[in-house]
Image 1: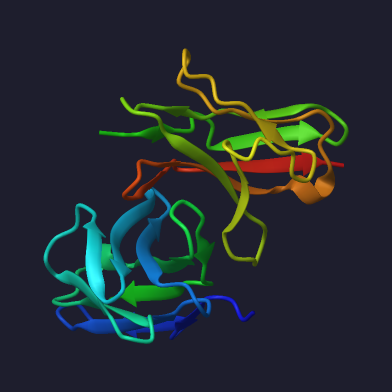
Image 2 (image 1 turned 90 degrees about the vertical axis):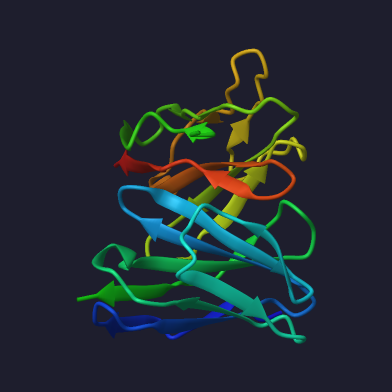
Length: 111
Length: 107
């Protein structure tokens, strides 16, 4: 099976802009979770989608949003980018609760 | 509140020496605990989970509810074990990750 894929792999944006990141889960996986990874904070949970519904949400401002499509692909959007949003954004899919398969991540740089 | 603590950011051991990566957690219920590993230029991957109670690549981890710990151990470290290790807790809804320990095995 193909692994979790994320596009784009690298992105440079300017403060105030918005960005959309995409994640394609492993075939058959209906749960997709998003994480922000930074050197100081490690991995922080953003949200999880299951069957097109947001099932869980972490402690991030409303500028961070997401959605999931009927084919389980998920997108994450960040509006009004801030310098502090520079991070590696990881997507993970799972078939059963508790076992996640991670994508390679999208490296976002905000200037 | 911090759910998972990995007190060591960096850990270096010599090849063949025992290694222990520490993980402490805070959670009132019955947690599910995991260790994830990220080798250089590879994606984050599951190493082991406490409910399976199996040894992966020679690593084991025992859940100690009294000490709220889930330390990762290996009796004889190998150079290929050099990686970033993350301890994680799943509370039934979401994962909480520690900040990670970078392990270097010195030849």
